[in-house]
Length: 178
Image 1: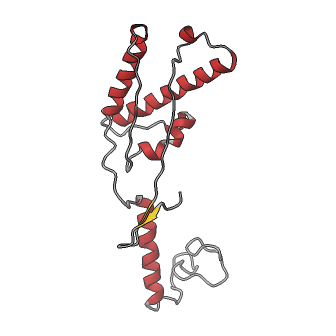
Image 2 (image 1 turned 120 degrees about the vertical axis):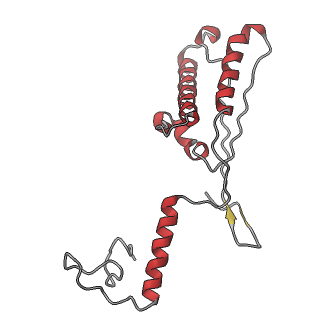
Image 3 (image 1 turned 180 degrees about the vertical axis):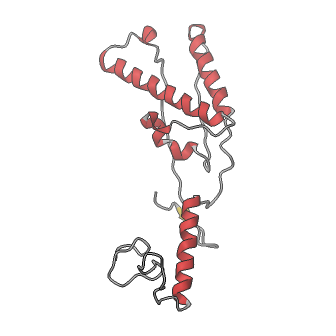
């Protein structure tokens, strides 16, 4: 995740990912007469499509349900793209041939389910709640140190010094390793 570009006016940076995934082809074994490695590939594609369908179904639900991103490598890799703050575009290819009617209908139904999912609007420069919380903590600790809060606090319940000002050379969780 290297920055793709820096904004000269506000010094902001943009990070992007582009996923190109081809799950195309007739994966109906009865139609392709696939055997061996090709059969295994078709089964894996079907498994990935099924897992993606499960994720889409969970995302389209109104109540907060568990989203099974870890059910396949595909959905695990797409987790950050499907979990909001992303722009998502999906192409579905269909066949005009009458003997592909059943597969075309399945593809169109899947596309309709995907279309009904609202991931929310992508926000530029947004960060997770945990990152924002940690930034606030760092700012508070920096302010305490700058305002003469360098002396250790006394009177803690356990008798140990507080973590607001760790001793030099120690590896406390608040300070990290040097």
